[in-house]
Image 1 (cartoon, protein in one colour):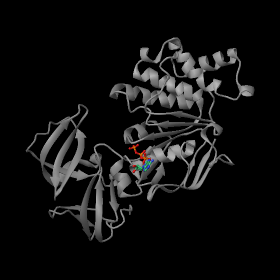
Image 2: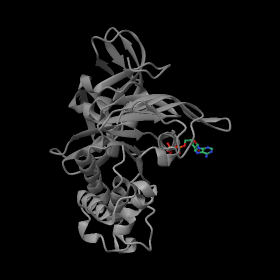
Image 3: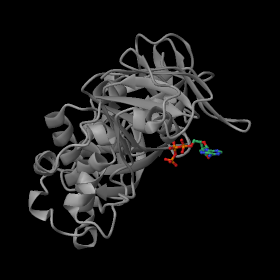
Image 4: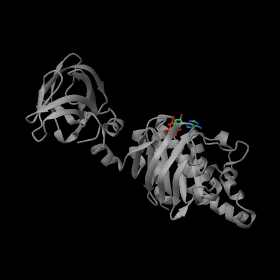
Length: 348
Ligand code: ATP
């Protein structure tokens, strides 16, 4: 089911948490709502779910206007960071619970409940755990139960609010892949809220990046990383992050603050903010600096150095060992550099 948000706005007292968001969430896809803490992504999700009323604007599920409908009339599945399973119930009963909540006339028979629970338990791969109580499960298993419970009613829309935040790093990676697999198999339209850009990049079909209640860019992970619409998007996506320099261009040459230069032949004269991704640096001859720190990661190394008055990070292969204090010179892959308007931050 396609979901459309039209001018969706939430004002708390005099604070605008979500500011005229216009967005289409495509049918059958996994859309990530991404942004720093406080940017309004959870508020947006809660308005889609009906747990929060919109101050302004409209929410369409297909061609149905659901803006004022309560959550139980929206046929959604919700999964939160804290799984909120019922501790006294078995896994089976936890998953079956939403089916018992239906109006008496729509309530499924016992055999149908069993079939529905077993099917969804198999999808999330907890079919052997149905007799256990939540406290007898690992964090990842509990989260699988929470996802199964959200899916058992065959929702039109699955809403996940930071569902993996409580898991340790390794389990988190494993569950990322699982959420993706489950979504692909169930084909349910899904919105996944996260503040973690790597998480968003690794599992979503498209990312909605928000800042201060405003959507900054909507794009697939690859496009958002390669072609950020502004400096905020460029800085938010990527680890190590992009380095931004204040530069001046004259006659096709970029001047850094310390007077070092690099040719960018097609660039018009003027002042810019120049973003250089860590992988845009390569060992070369043109831009020199002293290595301040080396973070060896095995397959590559992250070199920290200062150019002009800006500290930068470069990722280069680990074949030749880099030493702190050593001079290193770099060339640039120009295609991995972005120029931004110093006033507006817009990519030029
Ligand atoms: P996080 O990742 O920290 O959860 P978020 O992007 O999900 O952040 P929201 O929870 O949507 O952010 O909150 C957006 C803004 O709205 C924040 O500044 C928050 O303090 C504010 N806010 C949220 N709920 C309320 C409320 N009930 N009353 C007043 N302000 C609120």
